[in-house]
Amino acid sequence: DTGVSQNPRHKITKRGQNVTFRCDPISEHNRLYWYRQTLGQGPEFLTYFQNEAQLEKSRLLSDRFSAERPKGSFSTLEIQRTEQGDSAMYLCASSFESRATEAFFGQGTRLTVV
Amino acid sequence: GENVEQHPSTLSVQEGDSAVIKCTYSDSASNYFPWYKQELGKGPQLIIDIRSNVGEKKDQRIAVTLNKTAKHFSLHITETQPEDSAVYFCAALTPPRADKLIFGTGTRLQVFP
Image (cartoon, rainbow over all chains, first blue to last red; front, side):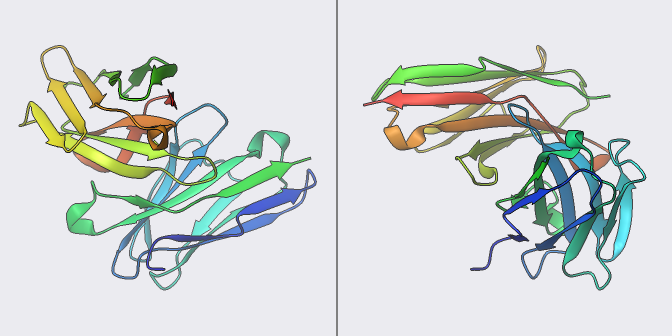
């Protein structure tokens, strides 16, 4: 499968715990994006990387959230001290820099904080 | 900042009928408008897009129209089939921020056989 891969698909965690999600983009893509989607809403931009550089962070990304892309390939999104309001689908997408408008999404990681 | 409104939130049609979903954007500088289809448990899939220098684009049963003056764009699906049932999202991109899509709130389309 050469699409965007996200793991895990589902995560249930207790409030206050830390969680980490992984995204493997399409191999030739140098841009990687994280979005959050809550029930009944469209995806909301969180952050994006060009290669290993994190170029922008949304104000939605509080200091409990951190994203990395250490080698310009896969990326991780960590949420510390999870809250119930963090429950959402976390989507990763990737694209070529030259064709940033054509972003391909992964299947997402659904986080439930109980 | 850019805001995208999408209507209707739900749409039910009989198989074979047409479906139209409409979006309005706020920033006149927006120049790229993709449409995504999201099936249950899956990520959004790009199905068609249009750029601001084009008024209409068609791909088989799917078409998108853009009215820059009114800041409206619409998705048209003809000869709907049950497998078209999904949630559809419109989005907009505004330069120079060619990296952040602003999505509408989605339309749940149900096609009844």
